[in-house]
Length: 458
Ligand code: TRP
Image (cartoon, rainbow, N blue to C red):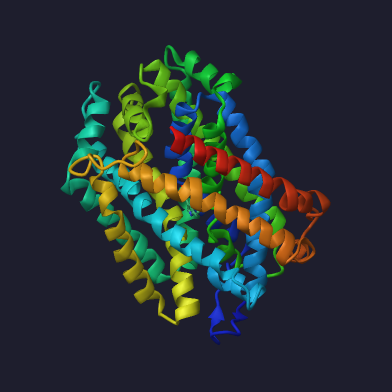
């Protein structure tokens, strides 16, 4: 297989390219599909009243997510740079590099607690495997017991962060592309089996109608902000992740179509995860508004209700861990690509030091349910606080500034020209420019300010 190389003018090194369009789509989908789909989306749907939230989320994906996905990939491919370097190269002598710098910072913050939740997933692989979860009884109690402990979650956080660091240190293109190719389809098969079990549980109908029959009376500013920030989080947008991945794409490839595949795969994965989890929540008598523990409490209960449940439990938590891993590496890659491109560090050193930094920065969130549970911010525990600051402020702000940059600084003509290079019929044009210049910035600004205001005003 030939791997085209592009000369990086600035540092005089060759920049690696994805081996094929499929490879790029899988890596980007691997980044997008993760805990956001399987853990965050179902519980946000649960706390935000169900189907109406799902519809608003879909609107956010189509009107905001997809246009920004194309924009970020085009910025990356054009500049052939990391998030920081891309803005610096396309608008030299201006402060726009700050947007890239904010992205690098955001990646660091998200990874620090993402790894903690990823660690819960890995821990559950072993707990299910060794039969350490209770059979048919107190799943909520078991989960709370797990996250309120001190050393165990720290240990699994270290394991998850260690594997993430090792993969990035070894280089992304080879290992992760191959792993994504094998494991993402397995995750899909497993999810479908779970959906079938979940929707056929007696009492699942209440969950289905909660998930699919909208009741718009539950919508407020917080719901809108949750939907928009979830769209950014799930699609890996707003912090230069797709800029970084786009910088490894050759100009022969069809960018707009790749973006459409990534967005569709990610949305389908979230929808199916909700379908696997929410009916079971109702059938088994859990609270849909339970919050961050929903997936980890509900799924073990579903496994207990099915033949070969132990087996599926192990497989499923393993696949969740893998999905989380292919996302975590993309977060780390944003920081590492910056250190490698701009600071001239070698990849191993950058990965190792960033990995250690993220581990340490995430420590308070592992302890936020136990010894540090008295520390709260606006009523949130530490993990929710990190999550809220990164997702409700940093990602939408990054997306807003990226849209303004594309619409008014670098210019929609330039973005479209880059995005359409290699296009085979899905070229972007007027509608995209209209969304990026007007709809995206105005919608994000209003939703972000009102959502933050509502949160702070209580
Ligand atoms: N999209 C991933 C998920 O759904 C998380 C993630 C990876 C991410 N890279 C990102 C979120 C960049 C925001 C920005 O789990």
